Length: 89
Image (cartoon, rainbow, N blue to C red):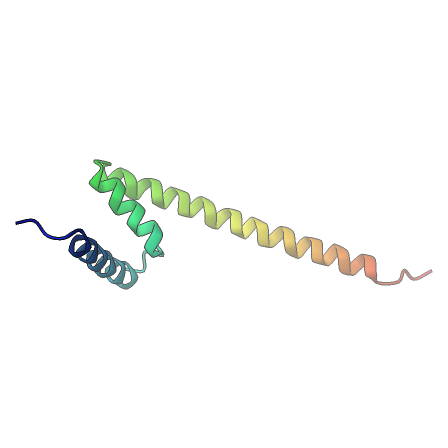
């Protein structure tokens, strides 16, 4: 006798919740949606090691872009503040 689809969904959700708790303990910085996507990819046959390498590379790139973004924002604020000050003539 097969289980009901809702039981399977509940089991999958419980498994994802446990994996999410583990990822939080390991400080993976993955949200539930990203974790679910990774699990789905692995279940579809993607090599977990390759997925980890790709995920780390994307995360590193995103971090470097965020740092650059913050630098540009600070520079624009300084330029704006300099333009707002009356010139000494």
